[in-house]
Length: 171
Image 1: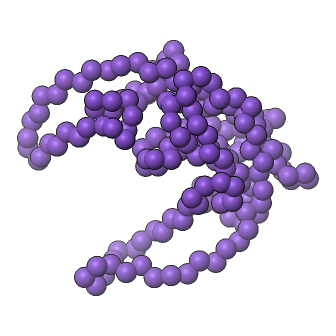
Image 2: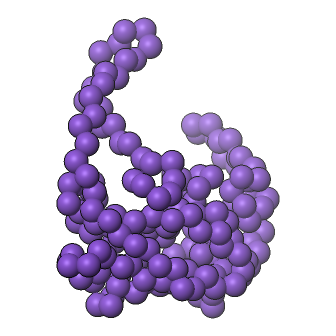
Image 3: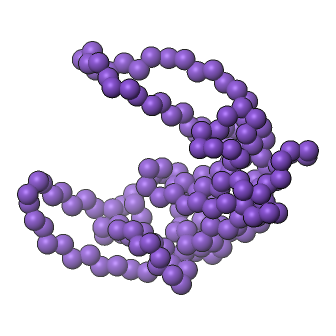
């Protein structure tokens, strides 16, 4: 369950039977089947994650960098976003406890050569995490070639391949 605006410094995410996705239960519902489910919501104190993006000397100002906070253990679930202010500072509110990868980048969604990037692993508890400094560095061009092979030799539809770094400090 995701609540769009929980307010009061509480997290917007709840999982069946727990506040931690790794311990969540699953409800299986088949096509046409109806299920009655009672879900008890609990408030979880959430924290703010705040810091500053610092570009290299002589580079573009840090205003407008895209900052994201992605859960390390479940990268497809929780992601929080912010943009840097004129001085490069950012704040991400209502972050539940957990391990995250904090990233900042100039440019578009898919970083290109010359875009500025930074990343750092962050542990969040129930108190605010402040004073993070993300030192951005230019992305280098990399050529990546390969073949996607499907089991059984089936002809695939067009495929998008996304490459992510494991973690800090290079991307």
